[in-house]
Each structure stands twice: as structure tokens, then as C-alpha cells.
Length: 257
Length: 257
DNA sequence: CTATGACCTCCCGCGACGGGAGGTTCAAGC
DNA sequence: GCTTGAACCTCCCGTCGCGGGAGGTCATAG
Image 1 (cartoon, chains in turn blue, brown, green, purple):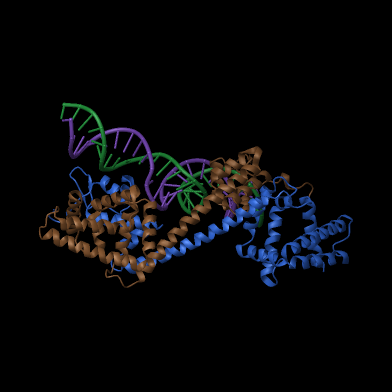
Image 2: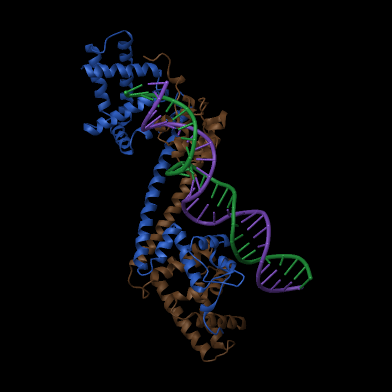
């Protein structure tokens, strides 16, 4: 039978590592950053850990396993006084972070699944459509805020699949009409050009919300086009320079009308 | 109207950063690791990026946004030939990784919610029970495999809430009976001690599965106790040294019977 | 006395950049 | 042509939580 309880027992660094499922190197690291130092040293400089040290290590490992940073762990373990309360706060905060991460992961999952579905769909004419989609994705994210992208997605969803297809078709018609006007020398001030602009903007209005928010979105799309016309037009059936000219022509007509 | 399309355009590093939503520093980094170098340099050494470079950057950014590492991106972008197929494989792999992460996060969430629920429950006698729970959590994880922990949890679930409470009560009675026998000097070979051991093991049998797997779990629990009696006993109403003595006494009686 | 392990300190490495120091070059206005 | 401020260059240290190795010292069993 043991004379006293284990309070007087000492552990070497290797024993401690084995008893707690960590590594010697990790314990060295905790020592370096001041998170957990051995309470004693032998004359030769070897670390000797006490029962208190071991208990502290168990807390550290448990909190690490829950995903807290070493700095946060140090904060709560050295916060002295009000452990229980600050622990609760820390765990609650961690729960929120995990929720955010889960949401992010869910969104990424959806996007990847969408890409894979599209990649498996042979209806696209372009063999490296996946790559083009990736490029456009990036352009979109750079120029539009998340909110704006969400609004656009909502609008598309509201229009429905065939609604979007119809709009695409309509838009193709408008582009061709505009190119004809432009390239046959009809001036931007002509009533035909101004009428075209009205129909163009009405079509765009189905995708952009009304009011100042819609205007911001439209402005972002214009900037996007100005900076990246060549890249965006890779997804379109007309060459970039013709589209650039058309955009300028329409802008002129818009000013005139 | 533009004479040629944008194919001949060059971008400075700052322009490229703005057009793609990155930073100059990131572009320097991509250059350093050979992921994306400017196709040209001015006489003074300033980077001049081409349209091809820009398109490559868009792909890089898009794949990064999906969570791929720069190394993986380099792999698929320089894999030449079979883009589409390797892209699909990479995306599918990424999807699996995300699923694993989601699962991990879900498990952590559950554990934290459990801790918070327990922390809010004032029925525990110990004010810093949360800390004690954390310590025991870590000890459990170190000595038992995930599978073993799951089995134990299953058993507890099968017993039901009041079943576990009844077992706890019964176990308390057995411990007190054992301490009485031990401390009144009854030898371990005595029939009363051997009978106690039988009832003790029968009780434990309700929690551990039968056969060799159960034996492994019991062995792990013994090692756990040997290495950490002081810490584990913090969760118990008897001091560590009395429990240690009792464990030894029971072991003796078990050999005898 | 020696061999073998366990321990010590110091240092480089990862991944994807952030950020700063200290110097050069560019573009625009005068 | 000159000045000025912004943009660019290279080099280097820091992040976070350790892993892993070099080169040396200490403890213990045979």
C-alpha cells in the first residue's frame, strides 16, 4: 500500500508524453512558449513534471482536441479566478466558429458538386468549358460582392430554367441587332439605337434589382467588362473587340436618349 | 474601335493584382514557387504579364477558392494533355476531403454542446466539474481507441439513463463493501472477497463487450488507472490511495478465485 | 567500462502568404 | 528636362503547431 497518494510523484518528459498521448517535441514546444513548463529540473537540466503539471497538460490536450489555439488555452488556464465562466464563453465562441466553418464547407461542397455536374454534362459545345467556367467564376467573385452574387442567383431562380433560357435567346437577338446597327453605320443618336437600349436595359432589369443597389451591380458589371473583356468574351459567341465596340455604342445611345 | 483584340495587351503586376482580386505579394509568391511567372520583363526588371498569364491566374484563383493547394493546382494546370479528366478527379478528391472535414466539425460540435449542457447543469456537486471532465476526456482518448469509446457509449445508451444511474449506485455499494473488507483485514482469499469480485466483474460486464475485445478494453482501463489513478480519482468520491489499494486487493481475490 | 537509450539545446522546415526595409524605375505635371 | 510621388524591385523575418535532425550530455543495466 502506498504511503502517501500520488501528489509527490514526478514524471520525466518521456513518461509524461506517453501518459498523455503527446510527443516530447510538443512538450518542448509548450515549454518554449510558456504554456507548460516543468515545475522542477534535475541538476543535469532534465525536466521533472509534477502532478499539477500533468493535470494542466490534460486540460491543454482536451481543449486542443476541441480545436482551440494554444494562445486561447493559455488565456483560459491562466485567467485564474473565473475558470468556469470564461471556459463557457470560450466553448461558446468555438461553437460559433465551427458553425461558420461548417457553413463555408457546405457552400464549397455545393459549388464543387455543381462544377462536377456541369463537367459530366456533354451538352456544352466547348470541350474545356470547365476551365472557362472556372475563369469566369473568379472574375465574378472579384468584381461582385457575395451579396450581389446572391441577388443575381435569386433572380435567376425566380425566372426559372426556361425563363433564363428565353432571356439568353432574347439577349442574343439584341446583341445581333445592335451589331447590325453599329456596323451598318447607324448613329448612336438614331431612334432605332435608343429603342434598342431601352429593350436592353429592360432585359437587364429582370436580373438586377431596382434602385441604387441595382445600379451598383450594373456599375460593377461594367467595370468587370472594361477590365476583362477578352476573358469574359471567351464565354460568349462574339469576339471581344466587337462586343467592346457594341458596349461603347450602347452607352452613347443611352446618353443620347 | 480597337484594332486588334486584347491578345497583345500587357499588365503590370499591380494591374493584374487589381483585376484578379489578389495582392502583389501573392503574385510574387506564385513567381517564387514557379506557379505563375510573368512571360516578360521590362529592361528594368519589372514584370509584364500577358493575357495567357491572366487567364492562368484566373484558374489559379478559382481553384484556390475551392480549397485546393497551390501544389495541386500546379499539378493540374501543368498536367497539359488531359485537363478535363484530371480536373474532375481533383475536384472529386476535394469533395471527399470536404466531407471528412464536415464530419469532424460535426463531431466537435456535438462534444462542445455536450460540455456546455453539462456546464449549465447545476446538479453536479463540484464547481469546477467542467475542468475535471476535460481532464478525464483527455485521459480517455489517450488510453481507449475511438472504437472502444464508441462501444462503451453504445452500452450506456442501451442501458438507458436510469440503468446507468442504477449501475453507479450499485458500484458505489460494491466499492464501500470492498473497502470495509479490506480495511477490516479480511484476506483476499476469503470467500466474501471472491464473491465480491464476481459481482464486481458481472457489473463491469454490463459495460464491456464479451470476448477478447472486452478483455482488451478492460486491460486498457487497468493501464489507464495505473498511470493516472490520482487524476481519475478526482472524479470519484474516494481518495486515490484507497482506490489503488482496493484495486490491488480485488486483483488478488480474482487470482485466488 | 561500455553500450544503449533518454534527455538536452539549437536550428531548419512546412503552407501561403503579410508586411517591412531599402533601393530603383516609371509616368505625369511643370 | 526635372521633380515628385506612386509603383516596382529584391531580400528577409514572422505567422501556427509542431516534426525531425544534429551534436552533445546523462542515467542505468550488464
